[in-house]
Amino acid sequence: MIGGALHTSILKRAQDKSLVEFGLHNLRDYTLDKHKRVDDYPYGGEAGMVLQIEPIDRAISHLKSQRDYDEVIFTTPDGELFTQSVANQLSLLNNIIILCGHYKGIDYRVREHLVTREISIGDFVLTGGELAAAMIADAVVRLIPGVIGDEQSALSDSFQDGLLAPPVYTRPAEYKGWKVPDVLLSGHEKKIQDWRHDQAVERTKRLRPDLL
Ligand code: ADE
Image (cartoon, rainbow, N blue to C red; front, top):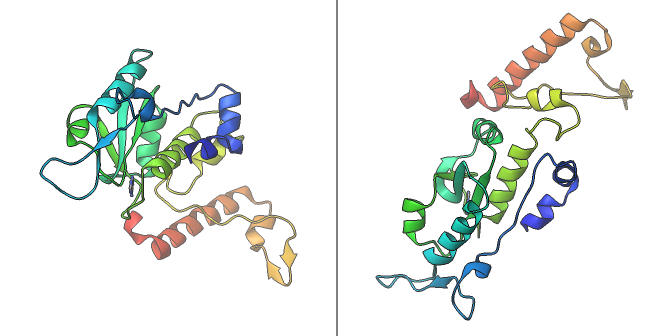
């Protein structure tokens, strides 16, 4: 699932240009169990299985023996909400481990002793943290200078200045009678900038007043 996300155009190109390096690690490669099991029954007799601490600790230790890591992030619905601001913070770090949570649950000592930051991508529950990890990777990596073609475009994203982005249009100037706003065709730079800002404020007030 994550491999698919990392091999799509922009993230793949970022790797090819050596702007970022991803490694995918399977916990089963770090278990000492001869059947490659990485989960076990919960203490206290609840339903379901729980991911064990040992393969996770061994995986993290192995990675840490190769380089320093700034954060060990755990994806979980009860974590801090992932926002553009969190993406910005993470994009400034050198190395990050993202440990994918699992619907079966995970030995809580992992969160107490190994994880440094817990992140949720929204108030809903996924079957596992893989999609959450892929989403975090995408939002963070695109902020690295050079990853998306036009560096300006990351700065003018929705949320980057706390406002939703203004609308954009391209040719033709009129289609089926539907017109591009006159101001954008005026060539008047100041008026265009003012219009974009007004639109950003208006759309934010209307669609996401909580951001203001
Ligand atoms: N794992 C399951 N649900 C999740 C969520 N909403 N955010 C992050 N990780 C998760």
